[in-house]
Image (cartoon, rainbow, N blue to C red; front, side):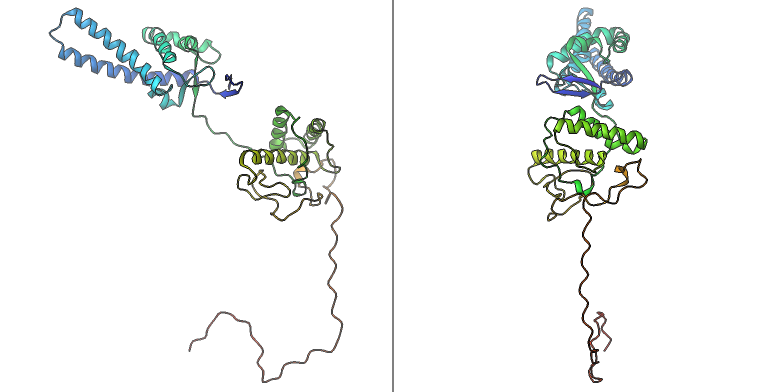
Length: 339
């Protein structure tokens, strides 16, 4: 991964192309270019058979320059760095700042490529690419360009686990502006990989990250809340704020969460539109429980009040059965007997 900084001080992470893929792209381009060159040369020789040797040599040189040098330069300029071979291999030529190349970049690359690719059969270009840290040949160095990979294999995306429902919306007033991006990245990486860590090590790491977040925000974590659950709730709150900032109050189309309209998190909504934020009373998921305790606590916060039993009706005389002449009402089954 190569980090390029644009003129607006934006860091771009690009994957420089390796030597095998670049060599394959150049080979495809050379096969097409030499095929076109031979076809044009044979056609010109057939039509200009009556010319002298000097004229034939001039036509050969002009054909060589136009077909093997001019056409690749024009193709890279018009396609913004994607020739036929690069398009087949998923490569692209960009500037050092990540922008698209122009005619002057393609001209310098093509002119230097005559020496390091055509005249030396690519030996100089291969040596320069192996020596360069980002795999650039001499044409790229002089032109200020870089060949990058456009088609990157999609990696496995890890989702941040959902926070416990009782913590959703509890940190709506928390100031998260002082938390650096590096700490957010560390918290996210821990939450996506905490199931792969040793329980004791994971708990200690969660405590350290939670203390760092508390030190940056200036607000203590709620008592009795596991540090991993606290981190998941804070990350969820940050994602909800970013969704509101980017998409407005309606979020991105997921069901609203308690106190956080349009919140974004892991798949699944935890609350409906009418639910109000309250103390954390549901059980803690096993992923957030303290591994040093024999069993995770049943709940945090005051116990839920047991609903009162409805009053029993007073004893009285038994109801009189209906007369025999009256047929009791039978439930409808939807079946109509045949006539």
